[in-house]
Image 1 (cartoon, rainbow, N blue to C red):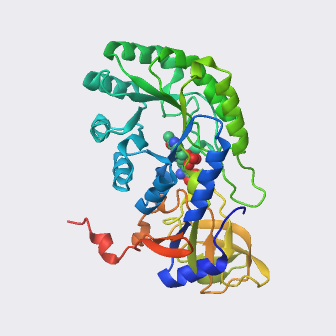
Image 2: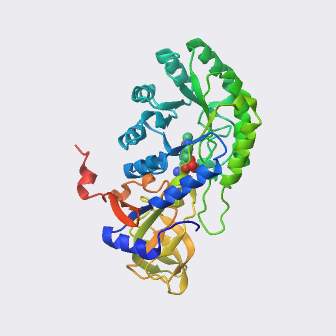
Length: 400
Ligand code: LLP
C-alpha cells in the first residue's frame, strides 16, 4: 500500500521458479518497518524486541538481528531458534505464559531475559535463584484492547499475566526471596490502532514502578496495527512515540528506565505474500468459486479471526473485474474471502494473498496431510529459498 513492495510480475516469476503455494518475504520491507519504529521513538530510550512468534524462519531472525533489533520469544524453542540465528542471549527475551518451570530454568541456563506471568512460577523462580538472576513480571493491566476478543490479552478475564490487583502477593514474594525485579511487562492485544491504549498501560505501570527499586525497563509489549486494505485504520506510530515520550518525561519515577516494545505484525505482516495457483473455477447459481491449491492449513487468519487479506490475480492484471469467492482445497469449509472483485480468473492463474508475513506460515499445519509451503526471501532484488516445501517423507518422519 505504501512504501516498498514486490510487484505482481516479480511474485509471479518467483512462484514459477519455486512452485506454489509459496510464501515470499521482502527483506527491505522489514527494514523499512523497523526504521519507522526507530524514527517514531527516537526521542525516548526505546529498545525493540521483535515478537518472533509472527515469523520464525532463522533467515528472517538473522536479518532482523542485523537490523539491530532484539527478539521476543514465546517458547523455549523460539529462544533456541533465536540463539541459533545468532542473537546474543542478552538480546533475547522470553515472555512466558503458563509454562512448566523447567522451561524457565532452561531459559535461565541459556542466559536470556525472562518475563514470568504467574505467581506460581515467580515463587519457584525465587526459591531456585533468589536475587541472583534479574527477572521480569508480566502483569495483566485489565485494559481491553486489540482487533477482536481472540487477540485481546490484557483485559480482566484474560489468562495472561499476574492481575495488577495482586500486587501485594507479588511484593510478598519479592520480599520472601529477595527477587531482583528488572522488568515490568504488559501486552494488551494485537491490531491496536488507538495510541491511547499504550498511554493507559503506562499509567497502570507508573503506579507500580516505585515498588521495584531495581527496575531497569518497562515493557509495553506489541500490537501495533498495520493496514490490511486501502484506507484501513492503522496505528499512528509517530503519535505513540510522542505520547510515550511525553508520559515518561513527565514522570520522575520513570527516569533512567528503558522502554521496551515487542512488535510482531508491524515488523513482518506487510513484507509477506502467499502465492497460490487456481485449481478449479466453479460457477454455481449463487456464487462463482475460485478454488486455489492452498487453504486454511497455510493461512488460517481468515477462517480463525475473520481477518481480511487483500487478494489479487497477479497473472491477468489487465483483464476486467468480476466478483468471486476465493476458497481453499481443504475438506472443510475453507473460505479466504467472499464476493471479492478480481481481474478475470482462469484456471492456472496465480493469486496473491497480501499481509501474509505475520502469523501466516507460522500458523500453518499439515491438515489433510498436505504439505507446508516453501518460503522464499527476496533481498537486494534476489529471491532465495529459505525453507523447502514439505515432501511425502515429512508426513511420515515421526511415525514409529
Ligand atoms: N508480545 C507478546 C507477549 C505477545 O503475546 C504478542 C502477540 C506480541 C508481543 C506481538 O503482537 P503483534 O505486534 O504481532 O500484534 N495470531 C494473531 C495474533 C496473535 C498475537 C499473539 N501475541 C493474528 O494473526 O492476528
